[in-house]
Length: 290
Image 1 (cartoon, rainbow, N blue to C red):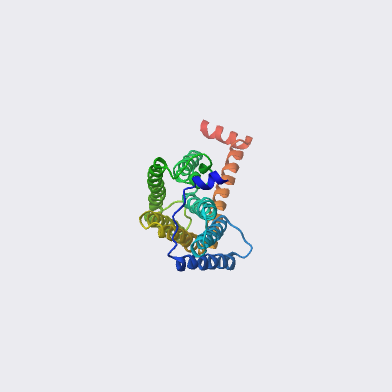
Image 2 (cartoon, rainbow, N blue to C red; image 1 turned 90 degrees about the horizontal axis):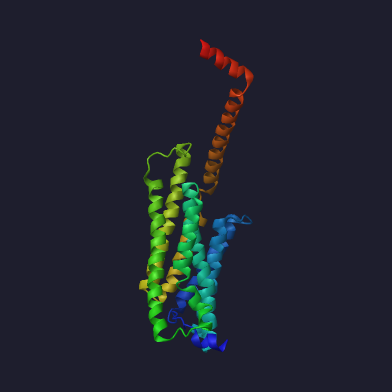
């Protein structure tokens, strides 16, 4: 444990912005309370991601306040600022953000292929997490992260994280644009549900834009940008995805699309069964002779 504390990266935290830290706690509590008011005992993917991000935002702010308001030795700084605030709570917020970016695109486009899922997983794992998470978790057990070589490596890894995070969000933003500007979409059964569909796609695109703004705040307004990014992330997930008036209409649209597909499959089964029946074959044979 002493080796891990000595070699820890000693994260820079916004010690002069305690008001902002307290505000993030208030924001997280509000988001959790409002989410409970909206969904009560109903649990969906969006609500789970939203509540995890809001709770992690509260936990991260409490950790930063602990070593901002009260004195902390190296051991306490490594535990609260490095491990808990970044490796645990920071990672949970990022996981929720990345998951919702991919998940909402998958819902809008009607599903993605297995190859797409595998490529997205490896992109996120190798470039968005493997470039920073281990520095705040288990690497200090083996390496001195305060050495000159590791300090330079940290700058390179930070650039990779920023570029990959921004590229990930930008890719799915551009992938959502056709669903916003296409005049006609044959998968939409009516103009009413088509409007809901476009609103849903617009909310997903708005979330990706806020996610890109967040990673820019983190990079170019550090260390305060660390808190600002997580605030923007929670706001984007809650107000663009979790709090939406179009959920029931979207469910009706999805249900209606399924009914249409089921009717088509049933109709095709009837046609195949009839074509294989003896009277139908005899009628075809007579028609051919005539």
